[in-house]
Length: 277
Length: 270
Image (cartoon, rainbow over all chains, first blue to last red; front, side):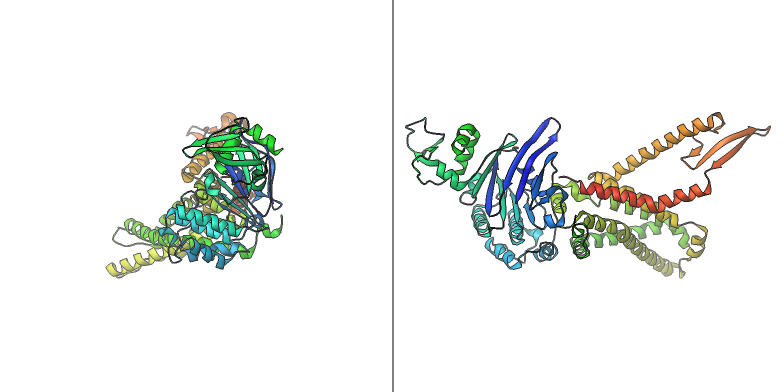
């Protein structure tokens, strides 16, 4: 679905952002793209959407070279940027002018999503708060039924109930034909939502695994005292005890702690990679 | 590339509809403001006891057309200067060709139509005011005026200027009007200097003054001297070449600049 091969890119000379980056993303998955601030998450998404052009290598979506931004490509990809634009029109007007450009647009689904997000249909876009506008755009993005859906920091600006609604609608929207990529630095917002994790750091993809493999190989637990420090891959202390990641040698089942995993991968990339190789 | 990815009439129609739906308030208000502004200017310029001929309004008509038309064109890609709007514009599922042609039509045909309507409304209002005050109408002497004056060249030059401004609008998202005017002035000055070097090389001391030429068209030289004074001669390029220049400026230059602007739009990154 999304194929990035030998991608090199830099905003300035001698300061590469990506150097020979490779990434394959398949349909039927919700990918969480995680990384520190400035790691290049948004730039990578912009390459996928065709808003930035590779200096070397290529970025293809459904066989289309993103950089050409052909209509056949654009009607199959929808990007919800972190900072977005909505024209100063009513929802109905927005729908009537934008929806015809997406052949698989589902009007009924759009209204259902708006209802789920508790957005009144008669309200004008200009009178809405930032969070409400974002929910309209997310609803439109989902209803457009594009094969690739890219969400850059989608939970920014959403209140707590809306974050939960967001997870609900995204989980319901995924299908075998769709590839959803969500970039965020608020990793807890993606709990129970994503099924694959991609971590980007230092211009490279340093981790790419599906959640099932992660929980097969790693054990996430909270302990009062750390007994065997050699076994602990990463730990984070809080008043509840120590949240630890250890190799899952006994094939036990545990719930993934996205934030802990993210910190572990950044802190000890070699040890984590070793376990997955 | 599939033909449908380059231009689809149906999609183009939808895109134009979207453009007007997004901007109808802005355009509607612009026509009203333009009409009122033109009316004020017309009234100010005709303070000599309200006795006025239509031909006397023509300088204002053309100055207004150039000023508003070029400013309007310079703002046509302003959304690319705004990250949010730029992303919305570039990721909208229409081809670059459809987006570009819609902008081109709006800034040429659309603008000229609106401007003429606005000027006509201002003209009619002014005529009504004059009739109310003096019981006479504005003298319509446009037939004589258009017969004496090659007025169509004002439109030709406008299209060339519009094409330069459109190219500037794609390149510069902020202060594009000023930047384009400045760069165009620099370009024309360089062209003038280049021509100066050539005419000095070709004509040497016979050149009247270093500035006595118009780039690639005319040169004034000294032919000799009499007791009364110097004899000058004006050398103009052959008529065939003049016609080629006019043809190029009229029919080739604007499309060339539009094509450059289109190519630049395709390569736009945000």
